[in-house]
Length: 223
Image (cartoon, rainbow, N blue to C red; front, top):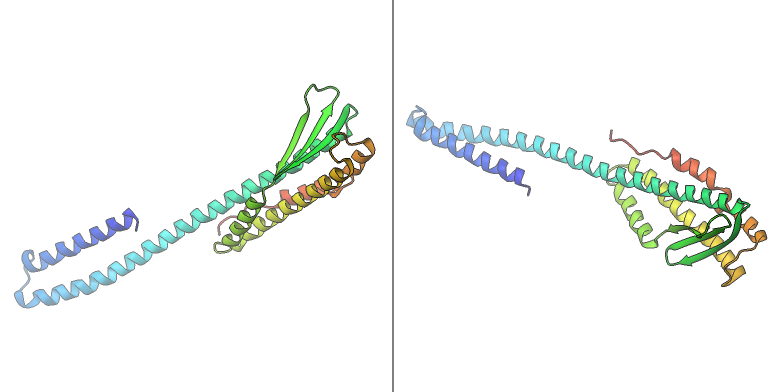
C-alpha cells in the first residue's frame, strides 16, 4: 500500500474519532439523541468514504494506465529507431560496395553479430558495419508485445510489426552470411562477381520498401 493511501486512512480515522468525540462530549446534543446521531453519522460517513475511495481508486487506475501506456510507447519509439538505423546502415553498405574505390569486402559472423568489413583504397583503416540482433532480446520483446495487449490493442499492432521486421532482417542477414561463408570459407576477400550477387539479395533489394513501411508505423496515443 502506498504512503498516500496510509495518509488517507489515518486522516479518515482522525476525522471519525474527532466527530464521535464531538457528538458525545462537545456538541450540545441531548443524551437520548446521542446514539441515534452517532449511528446516523456512522452511516453517512461510510457512504461518503466509499464514494471518495471509489474516485481515488479510479484516478489511481487512470494514472497507472497512462504510465504503462507511455512505457510501451517509448518501447515502440526505441524499436522503430533501431530498425531505421539498421536500414540506413544497409544503405551505407550498399554505397560502399558500389564504390569504385572499394578494395575488398569480407563478412564476419559471431554470436548475435553480423559484420560487414569494407576496405577502400582511399581509407587507411577498414570500415566495420555491425548488426547486433540478439535472439533473447527478440523473445523478451515478443513477451512485451503480448503484455501490451492488456493495455491496448493499439500498442500491440505496432510492436508486433517491429518485432516481425527485426526477425525478417535477421533471417535475411543470416541468408547472406550463410551463402558467402559457404563460398569463401575462411577467405577474407569476396570476388567482384559475388559482391554483385550480394546486392541482389532481398536484404538490399527490399531495403527501401521495408524502410517505408517502418516509417509509416506510428506511436499510438491514449484515447
